[in-house]
Length: 485
Ligand code: NAD
Image (tube, rainbow, N blue to C red; front, side, top):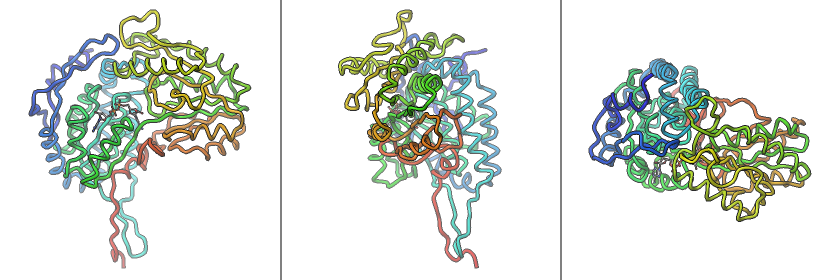
């Protein structure tokens, strides 16, 4: 099978943007290399856009809005159906692109990154098929209408998944979009634009401009003809986008950082809860905004948990992401690798107990951005590794003495994105979940649910993605009084 980079190169897409239903040359000449984190070698040169490219894309989205937003729901749903099927048809091409651009183990890309991305499109299609856009309230009609042109800004950690989590519901709602994917993971985004084209997306409904945040992202955020921005990224970028968007009073949906707790109640089955907790924290190498990287453990159980956690971490196979036996590849990019190394150093300096892992690469991997899965124990609440997002395979085990204290520690963060609770007494587990300030709480490691809304309390963001709430984010409310007699 042809590689994803060769496919994009032969199609001529690497140095083009998808605007108004066509692959267009950028206005400027800036490019940046996409780098494979397993080799640290450049694999493709990709065009970077500027204000004028954004101008063209927004104008195209604006022109397309009236037609798309008025299309019957069934026509919009039919497009989403085709997009869903094409993503799955091209699963291998997408998986390879993700492995090359951000180091996802190929097995994980095939099993999770790509199929879960397709799920967001399916869920958007299903919600659209049953959604009631007009509802009576007395004599008044409550109408839900597409908000307009949306700028969608996405990160590199789950590149395709974050794109479909925005494009699917935005298009279902009747909006037209300009996507700016992360400059660090442009390949899967270009393949996605090709899918949109092949699915027969009408010109201007979906547009893609690659580029860096402070130029393309900022131009979208401040643009007077963009009605809404949805950004997934760091809290830092989310704040900058909100500031840039403020003068034009556009809606800003933010899916930002996290430092999610995992409370292991004293009656939990440790032999299940601890390995699953380590697995969840290190899924995608901890490069997940809702990764439960603070494991809260009853003080008397700390020694048992450390043994179980170390055993679980030692089963991870870190290595060449293309190998079938690899469970975890390299860290996605150099800045992230450096940050993880720095924070492991901080943990050691702060006096946390190193259970497994530590600084540097695993012994057998001297080339590539490979990190050691690292677990610290006896972590105190005032340590930086207890409250700063690391976004890597670093787990902090924090002791608690009472359940009240566990809840207090869980909420002792500026974030509020995800949380987990483990225990046998389900009434107690539910009661603890009710006291945690976060957008999602997972009880005893349930399956992933694409219909469950996802988003943050506090500085983890505003608004919700996924499921019905994810589509409603892209709708305005219009009350038409006197509509009914
Ligand atoms: P990032 O903030 O560096 O970049 C995210 C996106 O924002 C990129 O497309 C980037 O180009 C853009 N951007 C950066 N500065 C901008 C600016 N001034 N104006 C407009 N756009 C700008 O984040 P990242 O390193 O790509 O991703 C990691 C972060 O994303 C972590 O903090 C993680 O927690 C968060 N994240 C959150 C969720 C969620 O759903 N809550 C999901 C995934 C990642």
